[in-house]
Amino acid sequence: MNGEQCTVDSWGLIETNKDSSVENRLEKIYKETLAILKKLTPDVFVYEKIFFATNAKTVIAVGQAQGVMLLAAARSKLPVTSYAPGTIKKLITGNGRAKKKEVQQAIRKILGNQVKSKAHKKTHFDNAADALAIALTHAITLSRRESDISVLKTVMKEGEKNV
Image 1 (cartoon, rainbow, N blue to C red):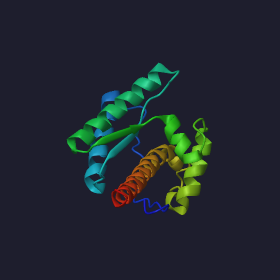
Image 2 (cartoon, rainbow, N blue to C red):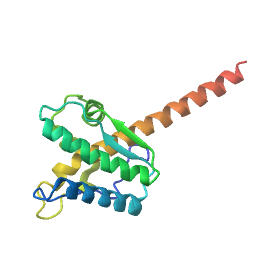
Image 3 (cartoon, rainbow, N blue to C red):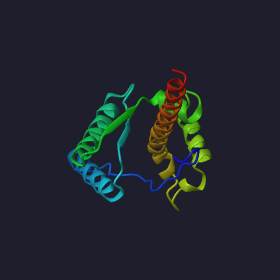
């Protein structure tokens, strides 16, 4: 983030065939995650914590996918950070209990044309919006920390002058 301006270098999805076996789907997620990390060379791997799920099958599948992505991050020697869903929603929309559509609308408003859906891929953005929200949450959090550190350094310098 540069001030309040945020630029999206790349975004997308790792899509698997729902008819493939679990192990093949996880292998694809792992390999594609490794390839993305190698190509884009990020400074950190950020993901959303699993907070609550009513469907055990879904939470297990999400946990498995997160596991192979975390393995890819570890193999790439990346630090890992995670955020709770409510934190992401609060930072992106101002409401920690925002609905999925509200998060998507906020992401479109913040990032504008940088996140235009691909032709004939109606759900592409809908599904990628969560990842963009997580990335933006991390950028905002880092920006705030840097601002806090800058303020603290200024206060310390002023304090030294008064001693």
